[in-house]
Amino acid sequence: MPRTWRFLSSLQLAIILLILTILLSIVGTLIPQGQSPDFYRQYMPRLAGLVRFLQFDHLYRSPLFLSLVFLFLLNLFFCSVKQLPARVKRLKVRSDERLDYRASALDKKEDLKLVEWLENNPLQLASLFRQRGFRVHLAQQGERKSFLARKGLPGLFGPELVHLGLIIIIAGGLVSAIFSQRLTLALMEGQSEQVTGHSFSLRLDRFSTEYYPDGSVKDWKSLVSVLENGQVRRQQVIEVNHPLKYERWHVFQVSYGQDWDQALLELEASLAGGPVRTLRVQTGGGTDLGDGLRLRVLSFLPDFQLDAGGQAFSRSPQPNNPAALLEITEGARAVFSGWVFYRYPNLKHYQRSSRNDLEVRLKNFEAPPFSVLEVSSDPGTGLVWLGSALLLLGLLAAFYFPYREVRLLHQAGQQPAFLVYARKNQEDFRQEIKDLLGLKHKKE
Image (cartoon, rainbow, N blue to C red):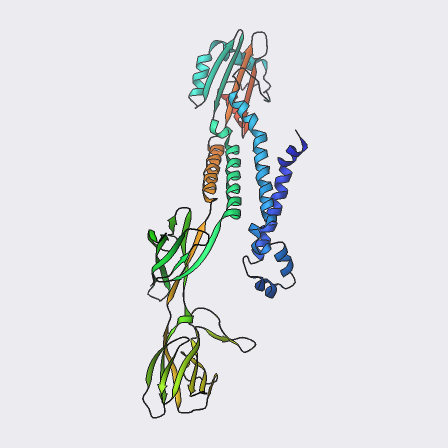
């Protein structure tokens, strides 16, 4: 056997590859995957360059990890190919051929008993094994008589089926890692977007959120249309774990949000001694207050917070601490500027005003919802399912249908041969057959 062949099919290589793969998987668990370069520079400044160079930021698609998996795939393949000829030979061998058995040593009384079975009671011998589920073959060539009984033929190739299943699963994983595509789309109702590089687009016709009695989210539902050449090819309500399938693509509901950049605010403004006016103003828009005053909404943050530099930002997309940045001008002069808070209407710390008679409060807010969809194509999925099925069949065959074989050979003038083979528990099986044939000689 060539040296390369022996190396690729060796158990030592399999162990080394498994250890390296496990170590890399641990690294992939410790290092957050799929983050931006700024994330690694901020949280692991000393290792950021190495992480990016080795592509550990997406380790499971990196050349290093894929190379290890590919080598393991080759190892399984060559290991299976090395064992397969012996399995096929055993399947095709005639009943009068000898294979690499370890023959049982028999004494004279046991030899005579075996000869008696083959010469005088071959049909009874065959019936005895058939009752126990064996397939039996009797043959005679001149003075040479042979008997073959075997069962559990599926188990003969059980390990090879397991190997084949693993090979196909790994191949499917490699195909997925290299060729799968995932796109994330955030759509508002009525909005459509082309799927990059393909001839169809997706349109969100309706989006709704269902809640539990305690106010937590129960489900998101998106009514999505697939458009191709301006025509609706398919329309379906998408929920979590209930994707839309179109050709080789799957469209999943992954999240939702609100477009706070387009928030519509309800404000109350008043001058001392005057009536309270209720205003509805879009973020980025403005309205007249009268008396030469004009109000503008410069920004809206759903979860107001200040960073170390004193700059305002939103900690999350959830409306935990809503605040609006307002400006009121009188002519060309700003008479009010600053943040007003929904939950803390009396907080003035972030405001500057030259008119003490001016009062503005944030009473309500709303923003158009959007649905976050993931469009994915995974050509390796079918291979993974096929490999999983073969793996299961192989395990069932190996453990529940173990291969067993009995060969009895005799030629006039020669000592008979008693040969047994089993994939597991061979010694127990040999003793079981000896007991069945009455070959267990007890010394007096």
